[in-house]
Image (cartoon, rainbow, N blue to C red):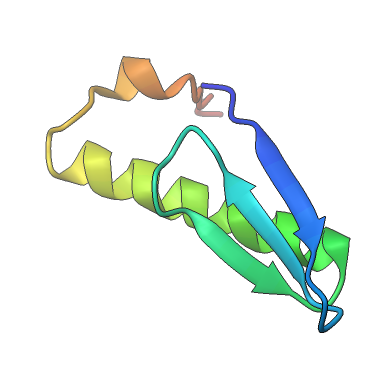
Length: 68
């Protein structure tokens, strides 16, 4: 899956990052990079929860693992 993250700097200097494809996935960071990293981590947590609850199948995630 591919997600778009929109960022904006608030008037108080904090950065907000919003994963527009996942409602409610919005985080703050002290820098733009930090906000993006936090948004990516939260999006992964949301996808993991959906997978655990059977809301999506593993193949819908677009993730691949290779066992060595």
